[in-house]
Each structure stands twice: as structure tokens, then as C-alpha cells.
Length: 250
Image 1 (cartoon, one colour):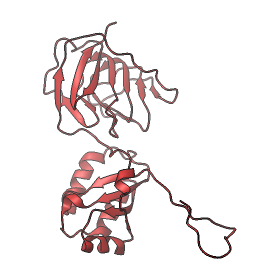
Image 2 (image 1 turned 90 degrees about the horizontal axis):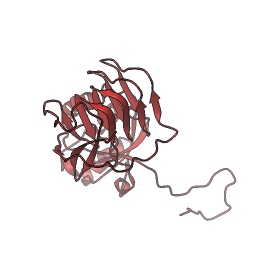
Image 3 (image 1 turned 135 degrees about the vertical axis):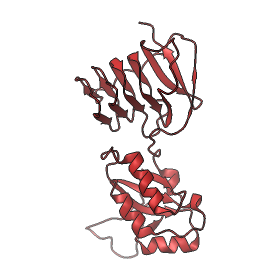
Image 4 (image 1 turned 90 degrees about the vertical axis):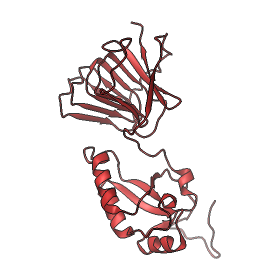
């Protein structure tokens, strides 16, 4: 909807409403020391996970607890997100947020993009091997890695798939917002659908990972893989919030 003001229309600008994709932060505690610690644990080793994304802070989970918005904004900007608005707060919280330069987000959360997710506690199950569903063709924009990933190395395919043509060694980490394809042994960590894409998949010619995760649901090597997929060509996908591992017919 175009906003009009009485009088002659200016030649140098025009103001219009805009629907912007936003990252949403659901603030569950006003303990900013705890938040700082958990943000470091979640994103501290992935400095480019965000790319100056606009962010709306949802205050509903924190109740009426007071929030130090100036400190919160500074903390979030350190992770390359740009807080622009708040929503769901009490009158006092909203006034404090406005004083810190944040707008009233209203229904902005409904317009936001999926909240980025790294591994969190989930469920998993095994299915009997069956013919795998057709795999969509890899987009031309997929990130291609043609050298082995050593322990301590990390690759993040922001907004796309990643294709690894060599081994992912134990201690290495592959992260993608889309699918992960490893045409070699996968022995490190593989995190697909990092920004919440539940349709993302992990495919490898040799499944021996330390951790696999899709859209935040994960399984670690602490739970032994079934014999039907361990060390074999396999895919991992998400079905009803459960990780399903299936042998691939080769």
C-alpha cells in the first residue's frame, strides 16, 4: 500500500509499505549472561552464519521480566544480526525497547523467515532399507568441496546445498542450509537444513558420522548406527520430527 501525503508529490522519494524477511529471536530469559554463553556455544565457531540479517525480538516467552535492550542489541549485533523491532511485550517492555531504538514489530514475526537452527535434542528412528525416493538434481549454485576436510575444518553453505567429493574426517564439520552430499566416507559432523528446512537430506557413500542433524533434530555417535546403514551408502531425512536412515541401492 502506497502512503500518500496531501500536497504535491515529492520528486526525490516515495514511501511504501514493505514485507521484509526477518529472523526471529524468541527471548526465553532476561538473563543476558546466560544468553551470551549460549549464543557463543551455538554460533561462536560459525562467524558467518548470519549475514547482517534483520531481526525481530519476540518477548512473549520472557513474560513481564525487564530486559536490558541496549545490551541485548549490542550482543546480537556481534553475531551479524541487526535487531530492528520487538513484539509481544508488555507496555513497559515495549516502551523500553522504543527507547533503545527498536520499532514495534506488531505481526512482523508472521513474516519472518525460518529461525536458524543448529543441533538440539531430537528423536530418531530406523526404518528397514527400501528403495530411496528420487533425489532432486543438485542446483548449479551448490558449493563444491573437492578436497578432504580435516579435523577442525568447517564448511558452511549458506542458502544452498553442499557437495563434498572427498572424505569428511572425524572432527570436521559440514553445514548447509540445504542438502549435504558426500561422495566419500562421512566421519565428521553433517548439519543439513541449518535454517530450518525440514526437507533437507544428507547423502553419503559411507555413513560413519559423529553427528547428523536436519533442521535441528540430531543424532550423535553415542547411539550406534544400525548395521543396515553403518559404513554403507545411505541417506538421512526427517520424517515426523524423527531422523530416518535408509540404505541406498548402489
